[in-house]
Length: 312
Image 1 (cartoon, rainbow, N blue to C red):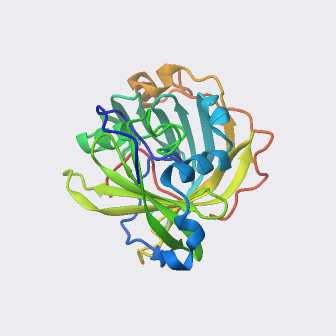
Image 2 (tube, helix red, strand yellow):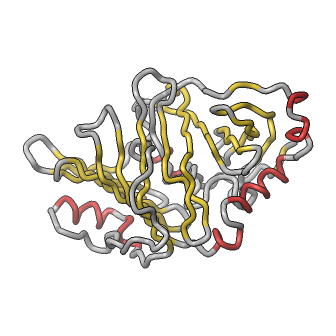
Protein backbone atom coordinates (compact mmCIF):
# COMPACT_ATOMS: atom_id res chain seq x y z
CA UNK A 1 0.00 0.00 0.00
CA UNK A 2 1.39 3.40 -0.99
CA UNK A 3 0.83 6.45 1.19
CA UNK A 4 1.51 10.02 0.22
CA UNK A 5 1.78 11.60 -3.18
CA UNK A 6 4.35 13.01 -5.55
CA UNK A 7 5.45 16.42 -4.30
CA UNK A 8 7.79 19.20 -5.25
CA UNK A 9 11.34 18.72 -3.93
CA UNK A 10 11.72 19.52 -0.24
CA UNK A 11 14.32 18.90 2.46
CA UNK A 12 14.33 15.72 4.52
CA UNK A 13 16.28 13.81 7.17
CA UNK A 14 16.31 10.60 9.28
CA UNK A 15 15.64 11.65 12.87
CA UNK A 16 18.27 11.02 15.40
CA UNK A 17 17.60 10.30 15.33
CA UNK A 18 16.12 11.20 12.37
CA UNK A 19 17.86 13.18 11.86
CA UNK A 20 20.15 13.06 15.21
CA UNK A 21 20.42 12.07 14.24
CA UNK A 22 20.70 12.11 11.37
CA UNK A 23 22.01 12.60 9.62
CA UNK A 24 24.31 10.20 9.74
CA UNK A 25 27.32 8.71 8.03
CA UNK A 26 28.36 5.21 9.00
CA UNK A 27 30.09 2.08 7.84
CA UNK A 28 28.65 0.63 4.65
CA UNK A 29 27.10 -2.67 5.62
CA UNK A 30 24.75 -5.33 4.36
CA UNK A 31 21.29 -5.52 5.91
CA UNK A 32 21.05 -7.69 9.02
CA UNK A 33 17.31 -8.18 8.64
CA UNK A 34 15.93 -11.60 7.76
CA UNK A 35 12.73 -12.00 5.80
CA UNK A 36 9.85 -13.59 7.66
CA UNK A 37 7.18 -15.68 6.00
CA UNK A 38 3.97 -13.59 6.23
CA UNK A 39 2.08 -16.78 7.06
CA UNK A 40 4.19 -17.12 10.20
CA UNK A 41 3.03 -13.69 11.38
CA UNK A 42 -0.60 -13.24 10.33
CA UNK A 43 -1.12 -10.33 12.72
CA UNK A 44 1.55 -8.37 10.85
CA UNK A 45 -0.23 -8.67 7.50
CA UNK A 46 -3.44 -7.26 8.97
CA UNK A 47 -2.00 -3.76 9.44
CA UNK A 48 -1.69 -1.22 6.66
CA UNK A 49 1.18 1.22 6.19
CA UNK A 50 -1.08 4.03 7.44
CA UNK A 51 -1.88 2.14 10.64
CA UNK A 52 1.78 1.35 11.30
CA UNK A 53 2.76 4.98 10.85
CA UNK A 54 -0.03 6.06 13.18
CA UNK A 55 0.99 3.55 15.85
CA UNK A 56 4.64 4.57 15.48
CA UNK A 57 3.78 8.22 16.16
CA UNK A 58 1.74 7.25 19.21
CA UNK A 59 4.53 5.02 20.56
CA UNK A 60 7.03 7.84 20.22
CA UNK A 61 4.92 10.20 22.32
CA UNK A 62 2.15 11.34 19.99
CA UNK A 63 1.83 13.85 17.17
CA UNK A 64 0.80 16.72 19.43
CA UNK A 65 3.88 16.30 21.62
CA UNK A 66 6.25 16.25 18.64
CA UNK A 67 4.54 19.24 17.04
CA UNK A 68 5.41 21.26 20.17
CA UNK A 69 9.13 20.53 19.76
CA UNK A 70 10.69 23.46 17.90
CA UNK A 71 14.28 23.03 19.11
CA UNK A 72 16.19 20.16 20.67
CA UNK A 73 19.74 19.60 21.93
CA UNK A 74 21.42 16.20 22.21
CA UNK A 75 24.49 15.80 24.45
CA UNK A 76 26.59 12.66 24.67
CA UNK A 77 29.62 10.93 23.25
CA UNK A 78 30.62 8.91 20.24
CA UNK A 79 32.40 5.58 20.58
CA UNK A 80 34.27 4.60 17.44
CA UNK A 81 37.17 2.28 16.65
CA UNK A 82 37.98 4.64 13.77
CA UNK A 83 38.33 7.81 15.88
CA UNK A 84 41.40 9.46 17.45
CA UNK A 85 40.23 8.43 20.93
CA UNK A 86 37.74 5.86 22.30
CA UNK A 87 35.13 8.42 23.37
CA UNK A 88 34.44 11.76 21.68
CA UNK A 89 32.07 14.19 23.45
CA UNK A 90 29.53 15.84 21.17
CA UNK A 91 26.72 18.37 21.27
CA UNK A 92 24.11 18.52 18.52
CA UNK A 93 21.35 21.11 18.27
CA UNK A 94 18.43 21.08 15.85
CA UNK A 95 15.86 23.71 15.02
CA UNK A 96 12.89 23.46 12.72
CA UNK A 97 12.54 23.09 9.88
CA UNK A 98 16.01 21.64 9.17
CA UNK A 99 18.81 23.49 10.96
CA UNK A 100 21.70 21.61 12.58
CA UNK A 101 24.69 22.61 14.72
CA UNK A 102 27.04 19.73 15.54
CA UNK A 103 30.27 19.84 17.56
CA UNK A 104 32.75 17.12 18.46
CA UNK A 105 35.56 17.65 20.98
CA UNK A 106 38.59 15.43 20.29
CA UNK A 107 41.49 15.99 22.70
CA UNK A 108 40.67 19.68 23.01
CA UNK A 109 40.30 20.16 19.27
CA UNK A 110 36.75 20.95 18.20
CA UNK A 111 35.17 19.96 14.92
CA UNK A 112 32.09 21.93 13.95
CA UNK A 113 29.42 21.49 11.28
CA UNK A 114 26.53 23.91 10.84
CA UNK A 115 23.64 23.81 8.38
CA UNK A 116 21.00 26.52 8.05
CA UNK A 117 18.58 24.48 5.94
CA UNK A 118 20.10 25.55 2.63
CA UNK A 119 23.89 25.77 2.94
CA UNK A 120 26.40 24.37 5.41
CA UNK A 121 29.89 25.01 6.76
CA UNK A 122 32.48 22.91 8.55
CA UNK A 123 35.50 23.75 10.68
CA UNK A 124 38.26 21.20 11.17
CA UNK A 125 41.53 21.32 13.04
CA UNK A 126 44.88 21.25 11.21
CA UNK A 127 48.00 19.42 12.42
CA UNK A 128 49.67 22.78 13.22
CA UNK A 129 46.86 23.70 15.60
CA UNK A 130 45.10 26.14 13.30
CA UNK A 131 41.59 25.63 11.96
CA UNK A 132 40.18 25.46 8.47
CA UNK A 133 36.67 26.56 7.48
CA UNK A 134 35.09 25.21 4.31
CA UNK A 135 31.60 25.18 2.80
CA UNK A 136 29.87 21.84 2.56
CA UNK A 137 30.87 19.85 -0.48
CA UNK A 138 28.08 19.25 -3.02
CA UNK A 139 27.71 15.73 -1.62
CA UNK A 140 27.46 16.96 1.97
CA UNK A 141 25.01 19.69 0.99
CA UNK A 142 22.79 17.23 -0.85
CA UNK A 143 22.87 14.86 2.10
CA UNK A 144 21.97 17.64 4.57
CA UNK A 145 19.16 18.97 2.39
CA UNK A 146 17.70 15.47 2.30
CA UNK A 147 17.36 15.41 6.06
CA UNK A 148 13.98 15.19 7.82
CA UNK A 149 14.46 17.56 10.72
CA UNK A 150 13.67 16.86 14.34
CA UNK A 151 11.03 14.13 14.10
CA UNK A 152 12.08 12.03 11.11
CA UNK A 153 10.55 10.68 7.95
CA UNK A 154 7.38 9.01 9.29
CA UNK A 155 5.79 11.72 11.43
CA UNK A 156 3.81 14.11 9.16
CA UNK A 157 5.27 12.26 6.18
CA UNK A 158 2.70 13.64 3.74
CA UNK A 159 3.51 17.27 4.54
CA UNK A 160 7.18 16.45 3.96
CA UNK A 161 6.39 15.04 0.53
CA UNK A 162 7.20 11.45 1.49
CA UNK A 163 5.39 8.33 0.31
CA UNK A 164 5.34 5.24 2.52
CA UNK A 165 4.88 1.65 1.34
CA UNK A 166 4.59 -1.47 3.51
CA UNK A 167 6.89 -4.05 1.91
CA UNK A 168 6.60 -6.86 4.42
CA UNK A 169 7.73 -8.20 7.78
CA UNK A 170 11.36 -8.99 8.64
CA UNK A 171 13.24 -10.18 11.66
CA UNK A 172 15.61 -7.59 13.09
CA UNK A 173 17.89 -8.86 15.84
CA UNK A 174 15.43 -11.57 16.83
CA UNK A 175 12.26 -9.44 16.77
CA UNK A 176 9.59 -9.10 14.12
CA UNK A 177 9.53 -5.70 12.46
CA UNK A 178 7.55 -4.06 9.66
CA UNK A 179 9.70 -3.02 6.71
CA UNK A 180 8.51 0.32 5.31
CA UNK A 181 9.84 1.84 2.13
CA UNK A 182 9.96 5.63 2.35
CA UNK A 183 10.26 7.45 -0.95
CA UNK A 184 11.59 10.97 -0.42
CA UNK A 185 10.87 14.11 -2.45
CA UNK A 186 14.39 13.99 -3.93
CA UNK A 187 13.57 10.61 -5.48
CA UNK A 188 15.79 8.66 -3.07
CA UNK A 189 14.27 5.81 -1.06
CA UNK A 190 15.16 4.38 2.31
CA UNK A 191 13.76 1.70 4.58
CA UNK A 192 12.52 2.05 8.13
CA UNK A 193 11.89 -1.00 10.30
CA UNK A 194 9.22 -0.59 13.00
CA UNK A 195 8.99 -3.12 15.83
CA UNK A 196 5.83 -5.20 15.44
CA UNK A 197 5.13 -5.13 19.20
CA UNK A 198 6.08 -1.70 20.56
CA UNK A 199 5.96 0.16 17.19
CA UNK A 200 9.21 2.04 17.80
CA UNK A 201 11.81 2.50 15.06
CA UNK A 202 14.48 -0.19 15.39
CA UNK A 203 16.45 0.26 12.18
CA UNK A 204 16.74 2.38 9.07
CA UNK A 205 18.95 2.46 6.04
CA UNK A 206 19.82 4.90 3.30
CA UNK A 207 22.14 5.17 0.33
CA UNK A 208 25.71 6.32 0.98
CA UNK A 209 27.85 8.31 -1.43
CA UNK A 210 31.59 8.87 -1.74
CA UNK A 211 33.28 12.27 -2.18
CA UNK A 212 32.68 12.12 -5.93
CA UNK A 213 28.94 11.71 -5.40
CA UNK A 214 28.91 8.08 -6.54
CA UNK A 215 26.75 5.56 -4.72
CA UNK A 216 28.89 3.57 -2.28
CA UNK A 217 26.47 1.09 -0.75
CA UNK A 218 23.95 1.37 2.06
CA UNK A 219 24.32 2.66 5.61
CA UNK A 220 22.31 0.72 8.21
CA UNK A 221 21.45 2.49 11.46
CA UNK A 222 20.08 0.77 14.59
CA UNK A 223 18.08 2.55 17.32
CA UNK A 224 18.28 1.15 20.84
CA UNK A 225 17.79 1.92 24.55
CA UNK A 226 14.71 4.12 24.27
CA UNK A 227 14.09 6.44 27.22
CA UNK A 228 11.41 9.00 27.94
CA UNK A 229 12.25 12.71 27.78
CA UNK A 230 9.32 15.01 28.57
CA UNK A 231 6.87 12.45 27.25
CA UNK A 232 8.84 11.62 24.10
CA UNK A 233 10.38 8.22 23.47
CA UNK A 234 13.93 8.76 22.18
CA UNK A 235 16.66 6.18 21.47
CA UNK A 236 19.76 6.83 23.55
CA UNK A 237 21.98 4.53 21.51
CA UNK A 238 22.36 4.84 17.75
CA UNK A 239 24.69 2.33 16.12
CA UNK A 240 26.11 1.88 12.63
CA UNK A 241 28.47 -0.66 11.11
CA UNK A 242 26.70 -3.74 12.51
CA UNK A 243 27.83 -6.81 10.56
CA UNK A 244 30.48 -4.92 8.58
CA UNK A 245 33.40 -6.70 10.24
CA UNK A 246 35.10 -3.33 10.77
CA UNK A 247 33.73 -2.46 14.19
CA UNK A 248 30.67 -0.42 15.06
CA UNK A 249 30.24 3.28 15.72
CA UNK A 250 27.94 4.27 18.58
CA UNK A 251 26.35 7.59 19.36
CA UNK A 252 25.41 7.50 23.04
CA UNK A 253 22.94 10.20 24.06
CA UNK A 254 23.32 11.13 27.72
CA UNK A 255 21.05 14.19 27.89
CA UNK A 256 18.24 15.63 25.81
CA UNK A 257 17.04 19.20 26.24
CA UNK A 258 13.75 20.06 24.58
CA UNK A 259 12.82 23.55 23.36
CA UNK A 260 15.83 25.53 24.64
CA UNK A 261 16.17 29.01 23.06
CA UNK A 262 18.50 28.76 20.04
CA UNK A 263 19.62 31.75 17.99
CA UNK A 264 19.43 31.25 14.22
CA UNK A 265 22.98 32.58 13.90
CA UNK A 266 24.23 29.42 15.58
CA UNK A 267 23.35 27.52 12.41
CA UNK A 268 25.07 29.87 9.95
CA UNK A 269 28.55 30.75 8.73
CA UNK A 270 28.78 33.26 11.59
CA UNK A 271 28.99 30.37 14.05
CA UNK A 272 31.65 28.65 11.95
CA UNK A 273 33.71 31.83 11.67
CA UNK A 274 33.44 32.42 15.39
CA UNK A 275 34.83 28.94 16.03
CA UNK A 276 37.66 29.60 13.59
CA UNK A 277 38.67 32.73 15.51
CA UNK A 278 38.88 30.59 18.63
CA UNK A 279 36.08 32.31 20.50
CA UNK A 280 34.78 30.52 23.58
CA UNK A 281 31.30 30.85 22.12
CA UNK A 282 30.60 31.90 18.55
CA UNK A 283 28.01 34.64 17.88
CA UNK A 284 24.58 33.12 18.23
CA UNK A 285 26.02 29.68 18.87
CA UNK A 286 24.26 26.89 20.67
CA UNK A 287 24.06 27.50 24.44
CA UNK A 288 25.15 24.90 26.95
CA UNK A 289 21.78 23.79 28.31
CA UNK A 290 21.17 22.41 31.76
CA UNK A 291 20.55 18.67 31.97
CA UNK A 292 16.99 17.55 31.43
CA UNK A 293 15.40 16.35 34.70
CA UNK A 294 14.50 13.11 32.94
CA UNK A 295 17.97 12.52 31.52
CA UNK A 296 19.64 9.23 32.45
CA UNK A 297 22.26 9.52 35.17
CA UNK A 298 24.81 7.60 33.14
CA UNK A 299 25.10 6.81 29.44
CA UNK A 300 23.69 3.49 28.31
CA UNK A 301 25.77 0.96 26.53
CA UNK A 302 25.46 1.65 23.04
CA UNK A 303 26.88 4.75 18.37
CA UNK A 304 26.84 6.54 15.16
CA UNK A 305 29.38 8.66 13.40
CA UNK A 306 29.28 12.31 12.65
CA UNK A 307 25.89 13.51 11.37
CA UNK A 308 25.64 15.79 8.39
CA UNK A 309 28.18 13.95 6.27
CA UNK A 310 27.46 11.53 3.45
CA UNK A 311 31.05 10.51 2.87
CA UNK A 312 32.60 7.28 4.01
